[in-house]
Image (cartoon, rainbow over all chains, first blue to last red; front, side, top):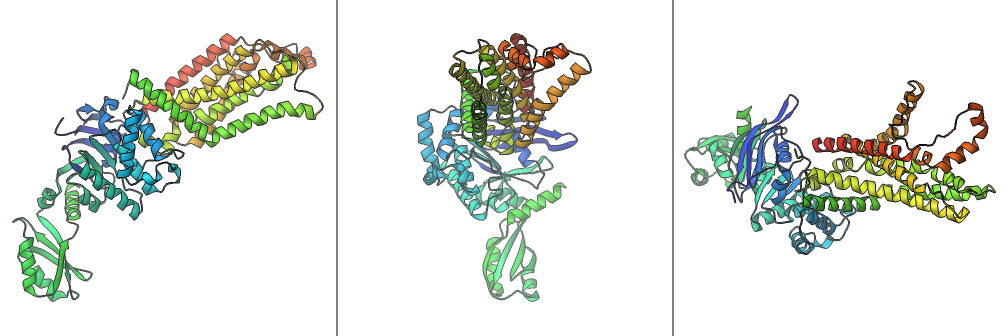
Length: 312
Length: 273
């Protein structure tokens, strides 16, 4: 098996004059959970729809397990589970019947469909509703079934296009929890597009950032965060920070700026000399200004914004 | 984009899609509406004459005339209700996001869905023919020997109408619009074109599909209708209804069906989500 189960080479999609994906080249490492990030209109969904054969590429290659989906979609998708956005099911079918139908489509034996269905429904916490019609389910429940059907047939690749889009907070949490279980239990390569940064940082170990249909960077989250050389932290104080406190914090080594953020202090650290956070903890403590908590403030967001800004 | 080549596994998947599609239609409201419509037509044709102190027919020609005069409408409605939504509903209801992302050729999906629609529509029209045959035996103890060829023409018309409906389904984005468009094209546009070509251009439009042909290919029907309009016919010096050779009509239906199916298949392959 290739070290890159998903290999995109010079993929391009044009809609008349508009270029949605502009020669995108990207390799997804085996057994990684990669987040495909980018602003609206960056080409994330178009890329994933080309990978899942929902739209045809104008040119380029999209290899899934070494098979080009633009040339032989049936063979390329044979080891792939997908969720594109929030799909719908036939409302009159139950989860069990849906799994049976999909199992039949992909050529599984009735016995193995039955056995896997029980396992999967357990995994997505839907056993209780296995025989209820899907038309009566909430969006979150349907999305958990969508996750379940994506795992049917033991795929080695799972492609997810904004799987929590359109869900309420509870539905989002449920789907994320299920994704965490899948990530922990399965030997899978997962590519997930999302614009929810904390979701990506929570679930993914790697990130591919695209903008204007092109790849900006693809790396581990850690490497990307340190690539910009800056990291944002939030310091919680016992008292509302005043100008004197902010000035003291801003004057510390490796602190680029310190601004008031509500009742907290928003710090930007210069990480170019390495991880300076341990030093910062002791420096803040020695200031004696009543700082009782220090945590990272969406450092991925800062990295993301910085990279997107540079690419404009 | 995939080409037209079929492997054994594609046939298996085609069967799975067809089975599910049939199940989907049978569980749906449109099927209930259609069955109800068929039952209402059959009951009215059977009971209304008795209510008016008559009966649904005294000769085999009269029986099939009374019963089968609605079969062309039933065929047209069947195509509009089922074939017109078979593809477009997958996009509109977002179920395509599950089915189309699976390892299955769009060709297998297309064939499976078309076969399911056509088989269901054909089954319902056949049921209506069987009811007509049953009533003919019950009322006059005989049945027109031309019923099988009428049924054959009805099947080819249904094939053509379903092909056109599936083409519309592949091109449009809303199921409701596709159904209305199919109705309009089959009920108004095609007959209108045929009428204008005949009356203005003086062209014999034998090459255009016509739902009336499933009746006009039955000599008993033609004779019964022409006899019932005897006075008008003698004044005009022409027959009110002309006999249509069933073979030619069937060939026209098959040709329209094949051409529209090929066009629908091409449009479906190109259609993106």
